[in-house]
Length: 183
Image (cartoon, rainbow, N blue to C red; front, side):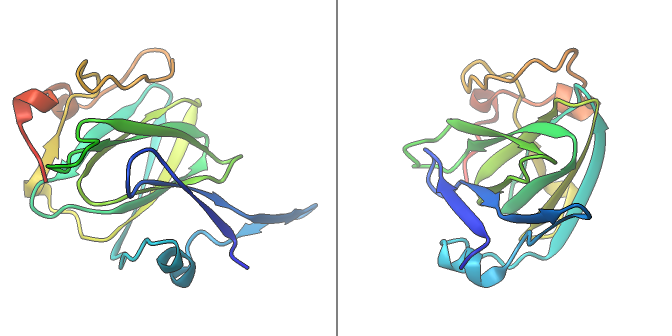
């Protein structure tokens, strides 16, 4: 029996994954990835890089993608809570420009799978959050792309986390129409 429940979202290929945890007075244990279970659910990635970040309330990282080296990502929160978003950038997709979001926290142990062809970002809702993710391609800094986090045509409904804190790079991201980017 699998320790994962894979929920399809309204955008093909994007999954919300609930993870079974085993706990007692000492703490808890959980599997965060098991290749046979993921392959059976239709997620057949070979993950090659793990990343982790720490951020404070209001930090918004994104919306990022790699142009010629796209990455699938399996994301989760180790501490705190974030609102995580995937935006479909697949040319010809019936959901191009649409988004799906999910709250990820240390309490719900939920994970989010984002396939290649998406912009990705998250907003920190707690005072502090540690965020971890697996990628199926290595990071290429020269290949970065992004779209504006609050592009009105995409229309992401971000939860209130107070003042939104962005990097200089993310402040300069174009809208989806301006970027004209598709995978």
